[in-house]
Length: 191
Length: 281
Image (cartoon, rainbow over all chains, first blue to last red):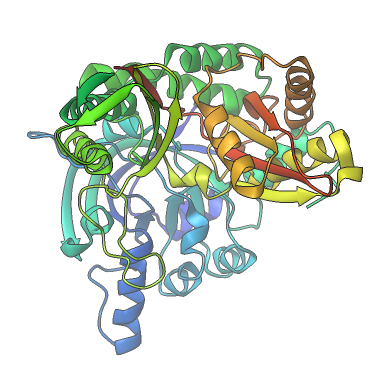
């Protein structure tokens, strides 16, 4: 298997254009953490015509809600949460310049279309490896919505955070391709 | 009649959740190692290596295995010759959850109203408490910190009796197929068959307490577990949905008699971070 490629954030259009489903990356730099409730708040801000709490242009959002930090540590466990819950929100943010999202699980057709249209990517974090992934976090601070507790909007500085490209900007999807490669039976009929 | 102070339940439950969220049971680690050895996809093997590394790191550095430390599911088998004293049973269980999640730096993931005020209760209570009266004078407590990634993809359907064994296999496989990478495979698939709708989901959930891969004591159920496992591992979903030959680590089937007109089937999915704890007082 090819070596993971080191990337310094923020993503540029050129780097995103070259990414393909299945590529393994190690991300370093600044990204933002938001999940369900923070996305809802960001949408309310946009609807009111207010600015977002951070510059979304070129940004990466990590769908995650960390466990509390023990004293002296930047963060507790932190791995990706299921991305489909953010599907209603993501296309609008991608249109505003969001370049990458980190999460897990299948995205909607509308999200994948937005990725193609605006040259952006969906990246898979390692679901259930919250302890290991926390070792890639150098600093963590709440940027907004502190009252949401584990769902607050955070800024993280990461070093070599491992991710895999799930949906690239050409429309390819690792979940579809991976499953097709190893599937030995037809689709089940019931349900 | 044995008297037991509920404070003992509180302290036991607090420790069980802290331990469960930091240390993966040995049988789960063994199952992940075995999956790593037989997985054909390099991408899935690479992730399985990292999951094994995660399982080793978490207890050593006291970082939870996964940030989703779950909704606190607590099963209590209460001996009928035990007299609980010193307070209310449910209050004592919730207090154990409250203490365990605070002391263990575990994430609180409960909101107070499901479809309106989704405000975090701040202490991961109320917990999900199931009490069963059994014979004897001991209390068995089993805990499952159940994350939403896998719980959200759990399903229930009442099949027609004519759909039979093949219908059950088709249905369970279709649930896992549609769940794809969302529930963090490789999975442990709890399957309840028969009973009523609530009974069958409870069986599916409780089946997750069984050590991974320990076959059902019932020969028909054990054979069904093997057949469902073979079907599911042919789906190609693989670790985290990246494609591969191991989608489930084990299938655990429980069954119960049911109505002449029904064939209920419940599928309760458990992610690879199959955390659980048990204590007998």
